[in-house]
Each structure stands twice: as structure tokens, then as C-alpha cells.
Image (cartoon, rainbow, N blue to C red; front, side):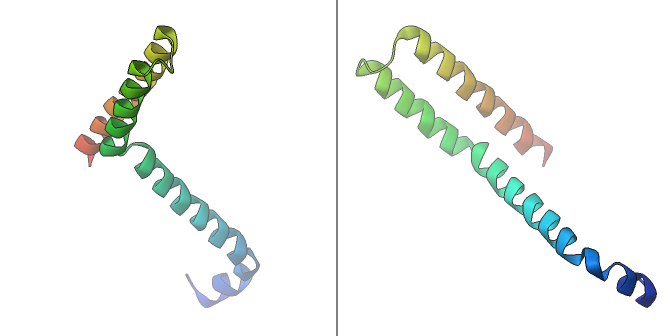
Length: 81
């Protein structure tokens, strides 16, 4: 970036900084959301809750499907890296 371009776009620096920060936050959130160990721990907790009678079979199936989908996506992301 040249000196003139840098000076002309200087007022946009806060916007670029905010956009960069938002991308960083989204990246961290996605890494945590698709962390295979975290998803497996949630599956274990879900199974325990079902065994304790805290969930109906329908609730368990729905939540288990969602967690298994997340785990599949986590594995796809790991292979794509």
C-alpha cells in the first residue's frame, strides 16, 4: 500500500480492525464448536442424561443426531487441513 493510499484509507482503519477482530472471533468459535473431543464429551454427557431419565427418547435422538453431524463436520475439517 502506497503512502497516498494509506493516508486516504486511514479513516477506514477502525472498520478494518473491527472486521479482522470479528474474523478472529468466528475462527476461534468454530474451532471450539467443531472440536472432536468437545463433541465426544457432549455425546457422553447426553448419554448419561438419557440413562438418568432426564431426556425422552425423542429428545435424545434429536440431540444425538445434531452432535453426530457436528462430529462428522469436525472430521471433514480435520481432513481438509
